[in-house]
Every structure is written in C-alpha cells, then in structure tokens.
Image (cartoon, rainbow, N blue to C red; front, side, top):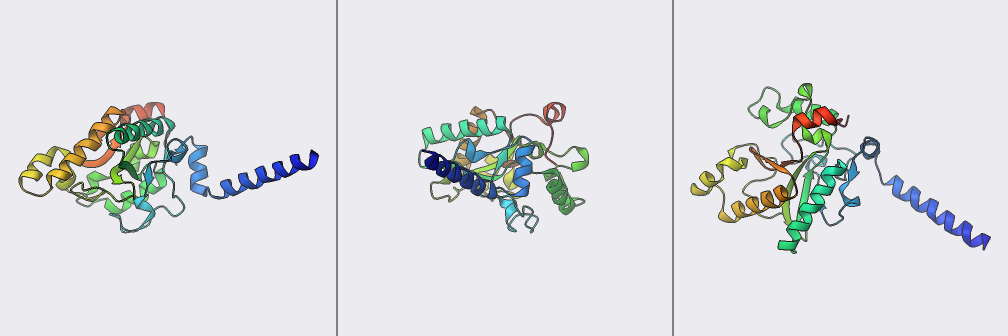
Length: 224
C-alpha cells in the first residue's frame, strides 16, 4: 500500500512539473496578476496570437514567450458565453482569438511603431494609461471553422483603414469593398459578443471591450 501511494505521488509531482514547465515567464506573470488562460474556461475557442508572429501591422514579433490567450476572469467567462451562443446557432463555427491581454511593456513597443504616423489613433498611448487590452478586458477576435480557418470578414484583423470601421459597412458594401457575406459575418460576431456583454469598437470590427476604460482605470490594474 505504501509503495502504491509513493508511485501515485511521484506521478502527480511529475505531471505538475510538466504542466508548469509549459507556462512561460510572461504567462506566469499574467497568472500572478490575476489573468486566466482562456482554455481553462473554454477549450473549444481557437487561439492564434497575431503579435506572436511578424505578420502584423508592426512587422515584428512582439510576443516572444506568449502563446496562450489570457484575459481577466470576468472577460474570460463572458467570452465563453459568447462561444456558447455562437455554437448554438452555428455548431460548425468557433470564435478565434488574435489578441487578448497585452502587457503594458508590449503596448509601449506597439506605440513606438505608430507614434507620429497616420495610424496613431488605432493604438492606445501607454502614457495615457493604455487601453483595455492591458487590463485583460478587451479581445481581438474573429470567426473560424472547426479547422481554424477564418471566415470572410472584409479585411484582415489589424487592418487599419476605413475598411475596418463598423459605421462604414453599408457604404463599403455599396461600393463593393466588402461582400454581403463579410457583412453578415461581422454582424453575427457583433450580435453574439454584445449578447455576452461585450461592446464593439467603431474603428475595428474585430475589437471588443467588456467594460469602459474609465471603469478599468478606477477599479482594476493593468498588467505590466
């Protein structure tokens, strides 16, 4: 009996070490500051962090050791609700996360790229408290099939122009700049995200906030 107990304990320790080894320094810091991996709340949501690659608007890989999508627990639970709403209507589709909680030091790197350029307004200034990504209360998201292939949305995530503005969509459709399918997909995404408690951003069809920036600054802390 004692031998069996020891063997079970050894397997438990080894398993814990293995799981813990998969968490990077940045991810440990995220957890220390109260963020949660979305896959601990809902494993069915796809994750493809665009700043973990160089094919984003900065042309640089900003996340060197972040591969999991972290959010504030409230935002993670709300996103899990959105996934359920979506899959109730379309079980063949899923949400896919392109960015979630973004540490403020990464926000600074991003700001340095756009400061003084024509797209400066698309990125929150760290000197002014950053944005809701830094609090884990915002998510950049799209729709995909169960293979992880994104649906037509009219532009790529992170495309900084009027093509991404949700208040320009009917004009864009009229001038054949986006398709009716893309418009329908955007509207579906907004509807299920709103139902889950998120608010869309006027200039970015993929960006959703759970709370206001004023509320975040008053009651929550950003991730360093």
